[in-house]
Length: 422
Image 1 (cartoon, rainbow, N blue to C red):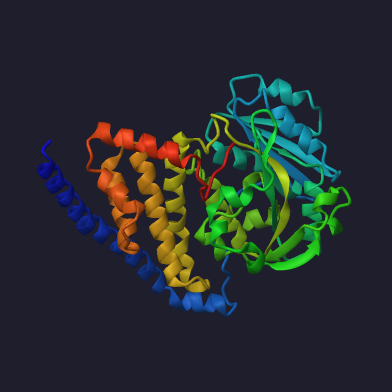
Image 2: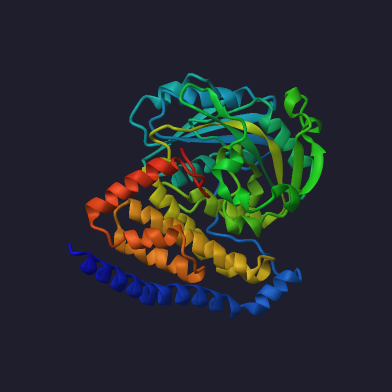
């Protein structure tokens, strides 16, 4: 193709995208904000305490009554018989004694059931036809009997003090209903490759100083005598996370413990988020129920570099799509009842459009990618990486694929704002 033809083609494409994509972006954001402004009186009432700010979806029906003090550990799994035993053993090894384990098998075709039943009555095995991680977590929760619920992915594991410390934290700060922690990253051989991985994995921690956002409470040693010496002085923080979490996920699912009553108020996982990103949308709702606790110490061993994880490149497109979907659902509805400046709201949408644009481009969907990237640039104009990605949408497929391969090789694994695995 002659150079001048290529330049003309690129110019027309970019101009068209700025016109069409830009109008769509502005219309989308303005429409959602306008819809919220129609309910301004409700927002003002909420700030005055007349209306709850709880974000709720359809309720989840539990099969059994809650048992005071009991912790239900829900482990969703699918064809993980070779590794799930480590997760179960780490749950049973907790220093907190009043605990049950519920393994929610999402249609495994291996001998997962045999592995689980070998643990005896403290571990309950429930099975459903394959329906995705959201449905599996809901299925497991419905069978839970505990006052508290904790999630553990079947390829992760816990340190023995985790549940004891989290239950103690929620009892000490009685108006709180969710506690999460930092985590360590391990490889396929169970070797720790990074002691503190939460802030690396979730890039919003670069924008939010969690130690300033939340109030400092006791030291971790006051919550559990089983905490190792190196972590005894780790801070326990508490406060409101409901606004900050709209800027990106801050919570990793295998580190969480929460009150079942909170889930009854805000709803279970949205099962239309079948394979990825379901955790972020769930925590946007759950943290709206009240204050939360962050234990700034790694309680969880999170496995990285495994091919079937949802953080693998093949899943990043769905995660990016569901990230945008979650904030399009909840951020415009609550922007007036939060303390988030509109510039941060605009930036959040811009970053989400850019993330999705790059993921669509990596998947070979160049027209969709160009539309999302142009929306991002319109919200926050700048000549940066997004502009180069937008220009690459006009390249021939072979040239673009080579350029993407080089870019991915040079960038390596990047932090992201939401992920989950079963």
